[in-house]
Length: 219
Image (cartoon, rainbow, N blue to C red; front, side, top):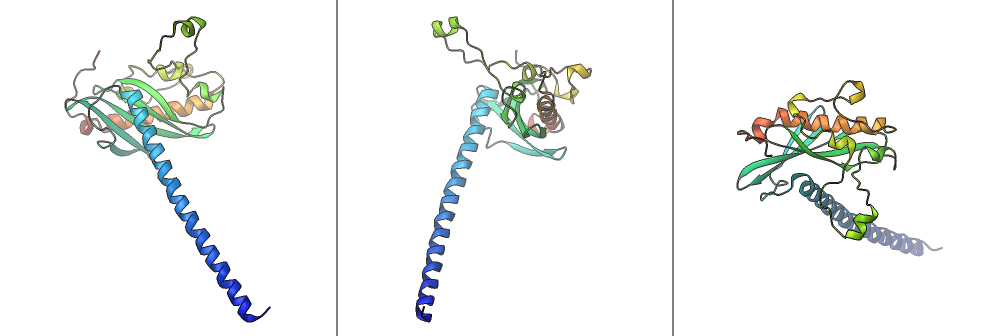
């Protein structure tokens, strides 16, 4: 092969590589944007599930704090300019499948409302019993056609309800605490508890900033 042919082939390959790299970079940027949008929408959906009705933008008003080496986001929910509750988003690295992230509603008086798991990689049917909210439908439910918009039950997640953040950290009931764990999902249960404890403690530590004038817990 002549030197001129080698040079031409080298230049051609370089051009092809440059074009391929450019296409990959563009595709990567587009993918990152899509992932960011999906993540943002997931956060908004979780806030609507946990907080109920509000007329502000909790994402825009969010306060980022660090507690026990982990980032915690506090999303204030307001109606007519008044704080009605706050969503504390935190995570634990102690799950069986790694990170377990939760979002907990906390009222201005420190009492916990709804709690959901927003991210997990636990074993389906075992660890997910501590993380997922599922509703079992009966034949009557199907035939009636009635739609139930309430939050599906979960024994562990529901046991945080009405606990006061000032009393955190909580412990599993079998160890003398007040929180129910799921049989066969010890590690997953511990991760959920760790994440919620962190959310509660972070709220309590930053309560003065989030709700300087705390009204009574709405009935």
